[in-house]
Length: 197
Image 1 (cartoon, one colour):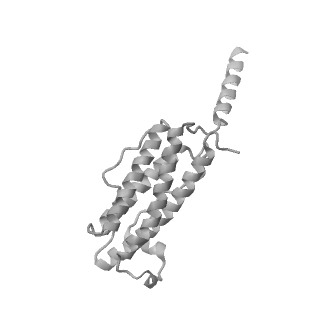
Image 2: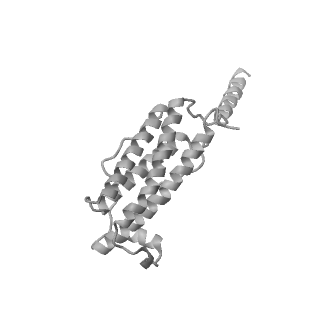
Image 3: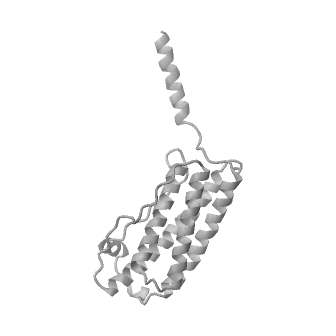
């Protein structure tokens, strides 16, 4: 009888843990870092057209299946996001942000000319945003994903035209990823303690 009661109590505790609300930091510093990250993502979105202007490819000439071209050229997909929940935690969200930023920084480095000042500024903004994401991980006492030297991808590019197409597609993907970041950061903000209602 005693062991049956212990088992019942353990089941109740497990059910309560599973139903526990999403834990988010209640901290003014975290919120300030979040605001800085939002501002930097907006800056990145404004910078992307400047980098596109440096490219010689005419985007209107690209009428083929963009997804097929992305696969053919070997451009890896950006991480995806969901609303913060017990299944998609703040830790997972920030890790995906970090991975996506590393990926796009490496893609830009591999595809665009180093002499482009617009590209240099965009890469610097991606690095700064990466630092802010790492800071949010630290402020929320989450484990920081170690920054890899180079995300694992191999581009299937043999000529300058393919480089131009791949750069165009990478910038389009970065723009979509950045819009996802904006939505995700807003979602984090609305789920912070004291901001509901």
